[in-house]
Amino acid sequence: MASALGESLNITAGSRPEKVYCRLGDPFLVKLGAMTVDKITLNDGNDIPQLGFGVFQVDPEKTEELVAEALRVGYRHIDTAAIYGNEEGVGRAIANSGIPREELFVTTKLWNDRQTDAAAALDESLEKLGLDYVDLYLIHWPCPDNGNYVEAWKQLIELRDAGKTKSIGVSNFELEHLEEIETHTEVRPAVNQVELHPYLQRWRELDGFRDQNIRIEAWGPLGQGKTDLFDQPEIADAAKAHNVSPAQVIIRWHLQNGIIVFPKSATPERIAENFDVFGFELSDDEMTAITALDRGEEGRGGTHPADMN
Image (cartoon, rainbow, N blue to C red; front, side):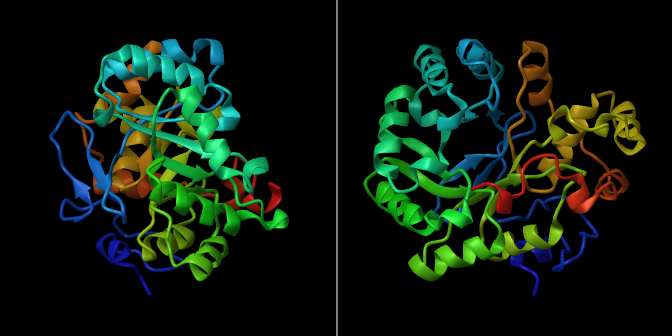
C-alpha cells in the first residue's frame, strides 16, 4: 500500500514514481520563498531546512573556514558526526558567525562503538560543538550484528526528552531495523539518512520510510565523485538547458523529490553554486529522464548497512 506522501508522488511499493517531484500541496513542506530554503516539518513537529551543508571527509583544519563560508552564503543546516572528527570546527564557525542559535539547524551522529553509551557520547559532541543542544541526533549505522541499536534508540529517546536534542533519527537503517525499534519503543525516527543519488534510488525502501512518516535525507547526493554521473546526457543536457552545472541539476532533482539534502564541497565557489538552486525548476520530462538512471544496488558507492558492524 502506498503512503500518503507516496500517493502524492504517484509511488507504489516496488516501483519508480510516475511523477518524481514534491507537489506544492505537500502538508509537510513549508514554502518560504523563491530564493530561500524550504523547511520540511518532521513527524515530531520540528522543522528542518531541506538544503544543508555536509562536512563528511572535510579536513578538521579547514572545517571552520568552510562552514563559515557556507553560513555566509546562506546555509543554515549543518550536518556533521562524531566520527568525522570536525565537530570543533563546526562549533567555532557557529560561534563566530553571529547568527542566532535558533536560526541554525545542527545535526550530529552517534558512532558505532558508543551505542551503549549514547548520553556520554552526545555530551562529548555538544562540548566540541560548543552547544547546549543539537537539533537532530542520529544513530550513524544500525550495526545489526552487534545487536545494540534498539538500546541506542531508547537512549536517544531519553536524550530528546532531556532537551539535549530536539529531534532524533537514524542513518543507514533498512526497513527491518526501523520495524524493530518501533516494536520495542513505539517511537519512530524523524528522519532516516541513507545513500541516495540518481544511480541508487531504492524507491521500494523510500516508499516504506515515507509510509512510516519518516523523512528521507540523502548522503552522497552527488555520487561522492566516484561515478560518471555528471557526464550522463540526461543530466548534462538539463544543465545546459537551464544554464547551470550538473551538480545543481542533481541537487534540484533531490529537492523536487522532497528529499532533504546536504552536498559538501571544499571550495567556496562550489559551496555557493550548490546553494544557488532556486532559480530554476526541472521539467517532468527532465525529472523522469534522471530517475531512469537508477542502477539499483549496482549503483551503490558506499557500504551496505548489513556490512557495517
